[in-house]
Every structure is written in C-alpha cells, then in structure tokens.
Image (cartoon, rainbow, N blue to C red; front, side, top):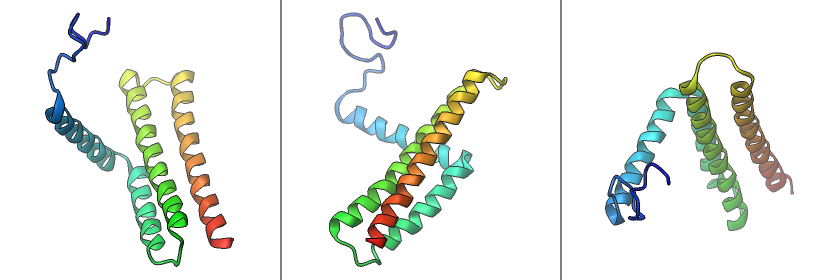
Length: 130
C-alpha cells in the first residue's frame, strides 16, 4: 500500500478533493514554475527564446495548422526543460557527490532538451522553407 493512501479509503491523506484539489494543484504548479524561473538560467533563456518565437508566429502569414504546430513545439521544449530541471533537483537532493548514475540522469535530461530544440528547428525550417 502506498504510504500516501490511508487503508480502505481510496483517498489521499491530504483530504483535498474536487475544486479544492484543483486549486491546490494550480498553486503547486505556479510554485514549481516560479522556482524554475528563479533557479534555472537555462529555463529563463528558453522563455525568452520561445517568447520571441511565439510572438513571431502571430506576425507571419501562416495557416492555422502551421501556427499551431509551431506553438506546440515551443511549449514542448518548455515542458522538457521543466522536467529536466526537476530531474536535476531530485538528483542534487539525493546527493551532490559525483556518481555515474547521477551523471547519466542529468545528461539524459539535457539530451531530451537538445532533441526538443532540434524539433523546434526542424518544424520552423519545414514551415518557413516549404
């Protein structure tokens, strides 16, 4: 049995349900977003980059589908960076000692962001050069 679940209730210990649970989820999400903005320079740089790219999509003469795909890849890149930052935080919380598995986890998160940025570049190239 998961330690968060009291036996036989099917509910979480925190007791938050319905709109109260949704409200707290939004608060936790805001807190995570703000922690990432404050603590991760790479995320701030990506916010600027994608902010510019998102603004440009509304200036270009694009079809709704092209615009939607270009917007989606920017948001995917931001999502990947949030997850990458979360992985780094957990690894650092466990230990700041150098360990091959810690390095792998951080490198894999970085690789995921590289793939996301390559996707952004590929989508932009296909849309603008087609």
